[in-house]
Length: 385
Ligand SMILES: Cc1cc2nc3c(=O)[nH]c(=O)nc-3n(C[C@H](O)[C@H](O)[C@H](O)COP(=O)(O)OP(=O)(O)OC[C@H]3O[C@@H](n4cnc5c(N)ncnc54)[C@H](O)[C@@H]3O)c2cc1C
Image (cartoon, rainbow, N blue to C red; front, side, top):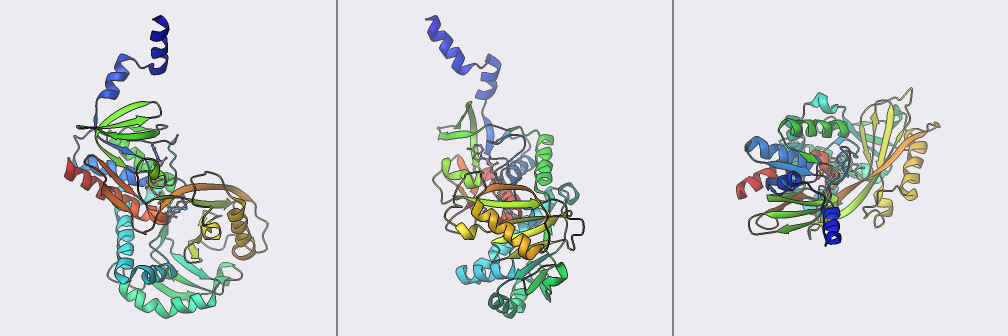
């Protein structure tokens, strides 16, 4: 008898008070503390301050799988990327993607002061290795600018530039874009989380949801250490969503590296090449370089948080041969993050059942679209409460 009591006590180990607190259902629990989940929680509290809202997050110490690990480009697509989207999806769908990204960036700036996230309107550039791709883009530049005029403003894709002016080697031309910006993603998320704390939204870090179970009046969240209840649940877990719901989302790894400081770095800004698959920017006087998952596309459909030699070697070769030729600068750090991609380029925002909703599949543009996707998710949930 005593043995049975002891084993029960050992496995639960909750006090009466803890048990009572945990069993009291929240109005909404958001799973995932990235840009999407945080924006959703802020918008829920803004529109309905009396709601009891909480966030549960699997990672520790204010980390996320992507929102604090990304490259910090505040972009809406390079010219070659948009032409590729247009060829694949049609003009209207391509313009919808741009609208969503531009609206998202404006929503982000309305939620977080630009100074708090080091948001710098530094301008962007697309550099071309391939003459044929450049000719195609250049021929379409004015038509694309006319399409983007009502969404973004005049002359989005500007004049030809000489990449040698930046000290690059092996790129023959680049096209400017004065509407692109860069930011510090960790500062951005810190500002989101401070805002949530000020709104009385608890963020339970290191709390992984293993399973979601819908009951008649509530949803039961099975965490690795216990159970929480909510009237509604928002799944904002992006690349890891398939572990909780059957959705068209694939975990997709993205890799980056950053150099040690470069005393005489000649440029500032964000750069794209290779149809957007490769990107680099300055971070102060360092260079951050990432992408290239197209070189090993199947292997990069993974949630493994490890760097791969194929991608890292290719990034480093590009850095040493073309971006910073004739320099021996050391690599300070390499890291990976997990994105969510799928068979379509738009995100999934839907109610999966009466009480379980999701806002996922942000692809490589989550900094741009996460805030407005979160806001839309909040409106969806409020329409069901
Ligand atoms: C290396 C890299 C570079 C990128 N660069 C850019 C860029 O420059 N510009 C841009 O616009 N986008 C970029 N992206 C994409 C962008 O970062 C993402 O699209 C965006 O952060 C997604 O935000 P999210 O909140 O939807 O998901 P996430 O930030 O991934 O947040 C989801 C959270 O859910 C948590 N979670 C998952 N499963 C569970 C569970 N079972 N229980 C509890 N919590 C769980 C995760 O730990 C995670 O913190 C990049 C991504 C990466 C990885």
